[in-house]
Length: 164
Image (cartoon, rainbow, N blue to C red; front, side, top):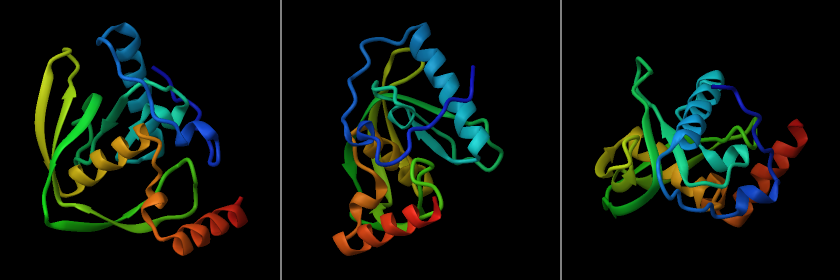
């Protein structure tokens, strides 16, 4: 259990797709634990392993108000999305100091391996759905600002560079 250092944009690993996890073992459990510790230290609502330079398909999400209701995801895959959309302000600690309004499906059905290595199908809605989609994007080498128009994306990146 440790707080890990984050990759900083434009580290090329942030644009790479991760490898699937073969099985849930002690190594995976340690990575999940480190992801939770790192996420909690930053007070964010989700974190993907690729954000730490770990190129395995692992993520954690916790948008509960009390905290401590972590969803541990291995090899998450979106199976279904709702037609209804939600807009939320999204950010990433990999590009600190900036954020943008992103539109995503309000509800998603996701398949993943849980902590017991069981294949689970789960429906996520609202902010849970937003965070799960955001983490899956990270695992696929997509940053939230990749969902913006080229002009807005360039402005956001320039603003982040100025803040460094």
